[in-house]
Structure formats: structure tokens, C-alpha cells
Amino acid sequence: MKRKVTVGFLMLVLITGLMTGCGAKKESQFQSYVQSLITANYLGTSDEYIKTTGVNEADAEALYLQNVNRLSENLMSYYGLDLSGNADTGARMTEVSKLIYSKIRFEVSPTRMENGIYYVDVTIHPINILNDTHDAVVACIGEFNKKVKAGEYNDVTKEEYEKALASGIIDILENGAKEMTYRDPETVTVRIIEGKTSFYISDDDFRALDALVIATIQDEPKNTEPGSDQPEEGTTEKKVETFG
Image (cartoon, rainbow, N blue to C red; front, side):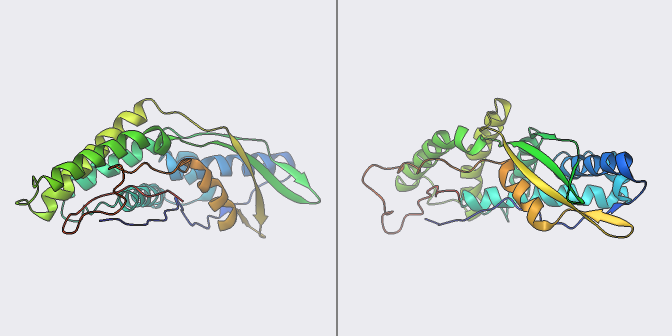
């Protein structure tokens, strides 16, 4: 199955903070809000987020789990995996997603005001796991395709077939997360949008931050079989496509 997959790691949110104080206190609150928004989405650390926004603990946990599940689903889509019939393997992918996000590196600068508008600079160090593990995943899929062509999966169920490939890829991602590398840091400036009693950052600003969390693939993937860009008729060949 050759699938062209376009994946974005997006968490579309509109979070409102509670407006209190003014001047330096308000600027500190804006910085804390942006810091807590990132930690709540990617680390599940929600105490400051709950304090800043006024949401309850269950909603903060739901925000984190939604983001983790989104990454898990995007990874499965990117690698062409269907784990709908493999609850245990799907749970492993979720845990890998938590592990990947736990490695996030970022810095939130102090709030600054320009022309009456407050801004916060956020520097993200993009997680490079897709590039770090790319060659190993391509090799894993290549070996899997050889077994498929040799008939080793002729008598297994679809669930067993999907689990066999997914388990190998998950192992690679787990190992890659233990020795994570990062791309050069990039900075995004987010605007604090103020209401009478609340404030927030826009979806567009959050998307700009989110797009940097995990680095995209730098190079075109190598064919798993030299000279065989198309799978043979009747096979179920897997192929990693360019992440974009």
C-alpha cells in the first residue's frame, strides 16, 4: 500500500486567560500564560495553566490527551498504519507520542509592548526524531516488504499484519526518543489579544508554534527496493512518503 500522506501536527485551540492587574503584573501574567499553554499541550503539566486560565483539571488533562492522540494518529497516518484492530499496539503508539512530546525544548521570553500591543517571543528547538529515525524506518519497511513478497504474511489476519510492521516502527521511535536530537532553534512572536476581562493568543499563532515542535523530513526517502518504485501486483508493499 503506497500512500501519499500530508501530515501536520496541529492543535487548534482558543484559550482564554483571566485578566487581573495591570502593568508589570499583567506582562508577567501574559508570559506565564504562554508558558503554561505550551506545557499543558505537550507535557501535561497543568497546575499553572489551571491557575492562569481558570479551567478545571479534567479539561486541562483532556487538552493534553487530545494533543497526544493527534500526534499518535498523525504518526500512524504518516507511516501508513491501521491499528484500529490493535488496541495494545495503538496504546503503545500513544505512549511513544507522550515520550516524544516530553522531550520538547522551548523558551518563553518576557512580554514586551509595542504600540500598545503585547507580544511574547517563543523559541522552539524542533524535535528531530523523524529525521533521526528515518533510515532505520526505511530499512525496517524494506525488510518487511521482503517478507511480504516471500509470502510470510499470506496466512495472517490484517490485524496481525499491521501489528508486525507497527511494532518494528514503534521500537525504532522509542529508541530514537532516548537519544533525541534537535534542529536549530526558531523563534515565533505571538500576540496577546486582550478583551475586557480576558486574553488569549490566536489559532494562527498557536499553529505557528506547533508547526515547529517536530521537524519535518529534510531529504527524500530512499526506495526500499532499488529500481522498484512500484510494488508488484498482488503485494501489499509499504513505503514511507515525504513528510510535509
